[in-house]
Image (cartoon, rainbow, N blue to C red; front, side, top):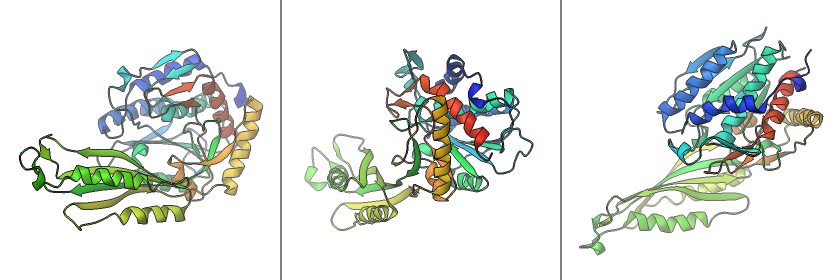
Length: 379
């Protein structure tokens, strides 16, 4: 049998394959754009001989792609490769952050989070198939469209698919030290709205009750609740259309991260307690999507980490394992108790910014890791 660490992975070849992925911009809220990305990956999976299904999107979001890779026991539960194809970068970001290589770094929107990892783990399957290597377990690939907004439309799909499998691989970007994630903190989202009373800001300012001013005061209060173990962040603030009008409606969105379920429950209670219809400005708080705590140190996941560490040692690098914030679809599979290894994708920096980039050396390194994991899990 071919040693998966000897497969002919090539950085330039992977960069050529990644370029159209990155240049197919796919922000979550643009379903048509996400679906163009799904078209691209669906074609590549079909070219590998996979049985590919297109699962229609819902809630106004994009489609998902599920592929059953060629295998004598194809369709049986084995290894699930789980990734998202949506990004936080709006259409047009390529003008400011073009796909480009500079020295030992490659830049591009969504390259680190998480198209780079998805591509690398798919390339490992491509090389294994080309070499005629049969993995011990069949592999299923599931790419989804909505992770960046908390996975509101595909959580049930992910959980149902994961339950059929023995192992889940999530090639989200590696932690800053190159390590994997073996547990994740809980995440909750909230939608806030203040409603006041409109008036002409120049003529009858005193008659109005500003929803913007009320929300601004709440922003300071909410972010002031942050501790090391439970954080509160206001990431969206929308209001106003005319500067000469006292705004009667203001909307905001809040993200809460907590290290334990008890802390999350406390954080949720504090946020919901902000609901108020007393006074002249109403504050409404609605709870949005939630990612459950994925408790670390589960035996199945720790065994996966030990295997990854053994493989990494053979390749020539180290992988640590730790619980982390940030949230991913690994929260769902890990919380179900399914052995899950997360953040085993490419190494890089500045995800979600106009400086998002990966380290070129991590492409071949992580492809070898992926190929060996496919070949040794379940062996």
